[in-house]
Length: 344
Image (cartoon, rainbow, N blue to C red; front, side, top):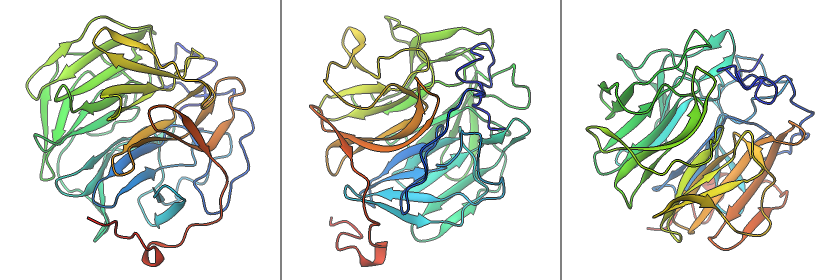
């Protein structure tokens, strides 16, 4: 049973399984399936937003042996870049290492009895490979963000074998080894949002859920040495994700388990609702990534707050307007694309 199945009915359970998930939309050919708890990252050298681990979170998940599929969004269509990854999982820590042009993924979960402890990497030249070496160990419901100035993927929090506990430790990965770098800072969390803020030159952690059943609205900043809390606190928010939008010059938080407010923007005075008409329906566990080449934030999927159904919709936000991408014909494979690899 997927590990988010009680997300709508048992808010005090740290694993947050969702027994109320409704019928999801039928899969669209040549596009990622409906899902929650997947991950989006922007691959600068490919000029694409990458989507990994779509397809989990419902009552009818694919078999546990199903390989991870890696999709790429080029602004006009989804491309299936790789269909031979490690066993599919969600709620993993995922980041894009822009120095090494490599996707890094640690941990994740398939169901309440099956979580993962390994680190995998993917790059366009070599495909998937498993990192051999010590690391954070078995970890799910975790988050990771890449600090480009220091060349480190930063991982914080998550859960493990015991669904009633969580971690409050911080790890960093430079591509050659994992290092345990801190235990102080944010409390033990799951379902928090985490992203690098280039304006602050810090990795931010926002919101989340603690083992005691508390939903938080705190924001913490990691400078590579220590965590610092950034007041004021916002309304508690969990099951969301973040991206830094260059046009706003600010962080946007999207998705929430208990509120119809889809998105927040962080300014000098803290977090405030993003006042834009229209846009995606309220949802939990979508993901977002900022496409720097096209200057838009991309959103995919999540679980609908009203029905619990999983979603497979793709949206873009240009800083002024949300635009839903209509269902489309299959994109050409990468070797037939005029913009693959992207210019520059």
